Amino acid sequence: MQEPDVAFTGLRPLIAVVTGSVAAADIRPGDRLVEDLGLDSLEIADLLVAIEERTGMVITGEALAGARTVAELESAVGRLQCTAV
Image 1 (cartoon, rainbow, N blue to C red):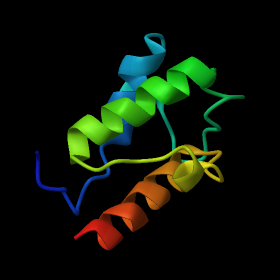
Image 2: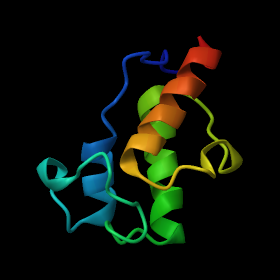
Image 3: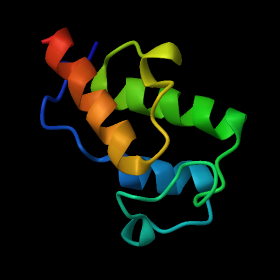
Image 4: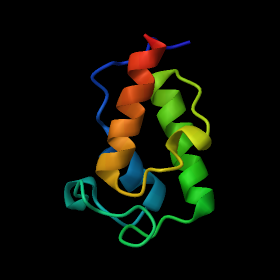
């Protein structure tokens, strides 16, 4: 199992891969995951798996349920990493 990367903020490239249509450079902190980036429930699940693989953490949907924007998602993942260390 991978050690958690406390400085992990690399969600934009992961989001870009999951969407397949938005470049990482075009993703902004205020972008809404569903409305602006077009993520559906399956893509959000894929994103959670990608984050888990990248960080080595187990992330539940409930832990990130309040995250609606890229910035909120980055913040939630950062908080989870702090508690995992």
